[in-house]
Amino acid sequence: MKKIIYLALAVISLTTLSCKDNNNAEEKLKKLEAKLEAQSETIKEQKEERIREKELALLEKERELESKEINLQKNIATQSKINEIKEEYIRRIIVISERAYFHSSPNSSTRKKQYIINGDYAQTERRSNGYLFIKYVNYKNQVTKGWVDENDVSYY
Image (tube, rainbow, N blue to C red; front, side):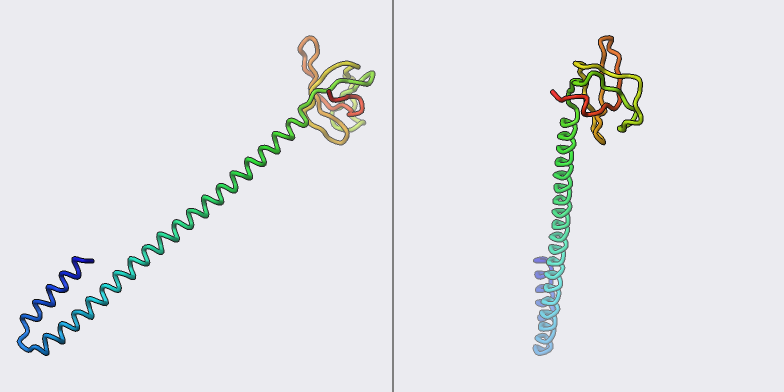
């Protein structure tokens, strides 16, 4: 911007010297000064516009970061709830009835022949409709999974 102003002043000076008529030189000088002032204003407005554009871009990036931070906090909260639920359902149980029969789904009409007996231990995986889905490992390390009635077991 300084170069433009110096250049304009040089042009004004040369114009003043080359003009024979003083009035004519003064008119040209005023026109050049007005033109220089208009260019300075235009340059100033362009700089202000660029600054506004950069500020808007920064605000948009701040909003994006805030949105990402909120989503991250939601994900952390959700994961925490999932972990709590897992901890709640993955618990050890002991059979308190004479026999706890396995079921293929969480309802009494799907009873299987397999059962675990009083004093056997197992691990729950989930719960539904008054039944627990359990994993039982016998003394031969054979795994049996299925649904058992909640009333046949107790948490320990």
